[in-house]
Image (cartoon, rainbow, N blue to C red):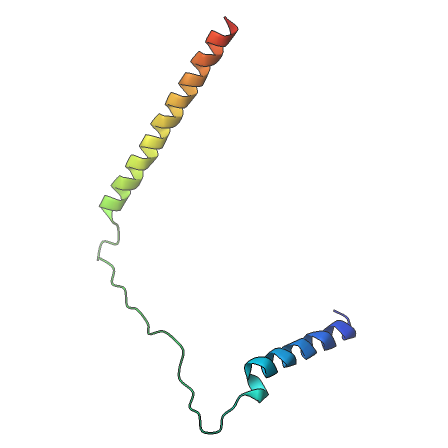
Length: 85
């Protein structure tokens, strides 16, 4: 980054701060600041740590996709055989 580019970035940042009242341009007289962080969410996990129902659903979806792919490939193969006959 050249010196000229660096100075342009600083000027841009300063203009944005001035436009939105940030940094040195923030009004602090008579105002209070509030925390903007969201409260933390606590998640508890079962002792075994593995959800067998989710695993079964995933396996079922994978098996269904495999069957659909095999069926599509068989249909394409048969279609090509009939087209060349």
